Length: 212
Image (cartoon, rainbow, N blue to C red; front, side, top):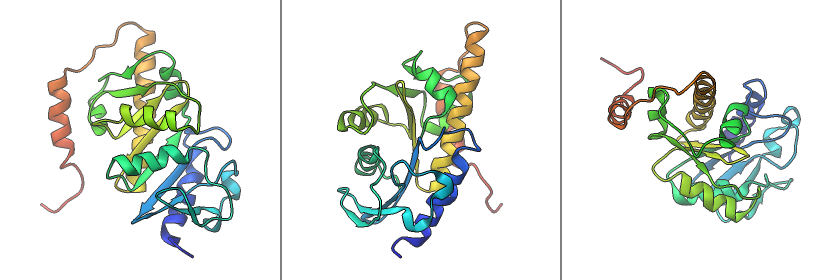
């Protein structure tokens, strides 16, 4: 089986989507790139029924290589991320707080220093019908200089150099949106200045367990 490790990784993370509150039903999708191939979730299949064999393998132009089911309808978004960034994994969710925020604001502002994980305030991409090239183009514009964006009246997209990192980004983004919505409900939130976000971004680049 082609890309066996990547396909198993996709299944493992898909099984977490609903428990982690990132999707409802079969909404949302995940992909992992390996070289010129992409392992991506199929369209409309319940995550409890998903197996590695049902995760399709496609070329970067979308052509199937080893796929028994049609790929996610959001395949254009995934392929656009791979074409426009150095990503090796993409996570698309319909998480509640981010979707609510997408109907109220043009960006997620620096409500907390962890917004530096994404390169700065997270933009809301202009609305377009799901599964279209227009939506993919709007997403790419919103991702400029960022590793995440929010899709207007839709959901989120995050990417990373591993699936674990892209998935973690989706979790952090949802938490930050929840913090902003709660703070906004009580008044005008105090935001952090751009220079602080830049400072944190530099610190985060070397964060993590490493030898002394």
